[in-house]
Image (cartoon, rainbow, N blue to C red; front, side, top):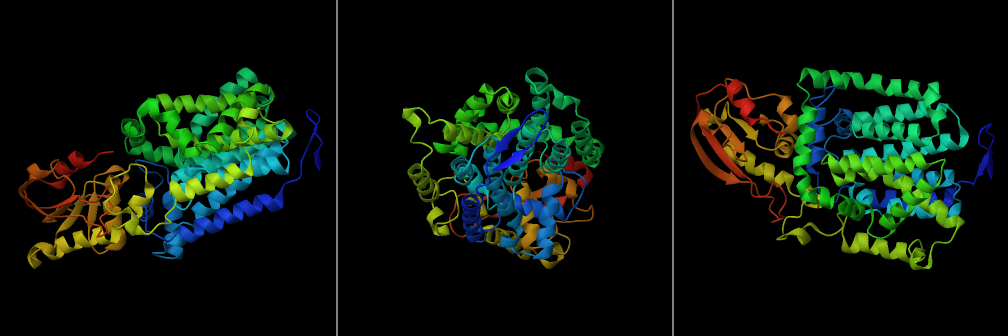
Length: 496
């Protein structure tokens, strides 16, 4: 046992269950690495690479961290999908270990740490996106690190942990702005429920100052560009209908973290935190953050970063006192084994099946695997439309897309083709030059059609495997005879 001496709170913590926990983490790493190159780039990954090649302090739809990571990985190994995804695997594996360490901070020994680590490793949300370089993969791992630091501070009162929390927050803000909601609720919860001495610690405010200062360049970029992130938030709220809006928020969130183990342990964990005066503020924070994202139209996975905390609190409590008979069977190895079969074999959250298995299936919003398929073939259709132009037209022709995934794919797989888009952050990468000629438009050209003499459909995107993803079947138009400057047309094309 490792004993921490503290003038305010003296409590021993169990040894870290290094062998079993690292075995779970290693198995997770091997699985994610094995499938990391099985299909292809996810649409957002292509966008992050494109954004990285237009590096800025901020973007219309996100802070700069993911584009910077994508640029670094694509520079180290250009065109290597497995290399691009290494940071995602590291984040997911770190989440497994940190969740076990959270259970240890709550007094959980070997069994509790394994219960918590297993809940993370088998969560459809974390496992299903763990092989993708995405904000939804990196952000929850940072939240897990942040909550671990807070829980450890409650036990040890070591103020250096609050400076570390400020550094983690600084990184999290550069990934996604969601962590601001966490701190807003947490500070109010501490003020109401304690421990109020946290708010009197200079280290907390020093850590906060570090986080704020590192965010200044991004905020300056947002201010200089008309605060597009605010419009992006409204766009996300409008899109939340795909998950059932406010009514579907909680059911979808619980389904994503695990229909049985993850959801049961999360509910139990909230109860345990609320019942413990020392950690009640964290239980209130979990509920408050959920409420904020629910009423603001956020996506269900926005709350994913809170679940490792809840699982850890639940696991430590389960180890200390046996649960009620009616749910005692949930945190047992047969249920974990059955969940692994369900998640991997039935829900198919990872790209294990052959690509042909997805052919002729209806579109399923939220099935990320569908949008990992066929980008090179789709880009070939755009390239073919460009090659079909007469030489005099092809010389100064440009490609414009109605969505940011397609333009990112074109820039990646056909870098010699001048491609632009008015969608989301890609709209800030630049517009076509005024001396450009014909336009190959991928998508609906109605926003700019009035600026051209002729609009003719010349094809459609086809991934060659009949997988119905978000891009499949998108029409390709040829726009000729532009009689308005792009400076007038581009604002109509911009959208979030």
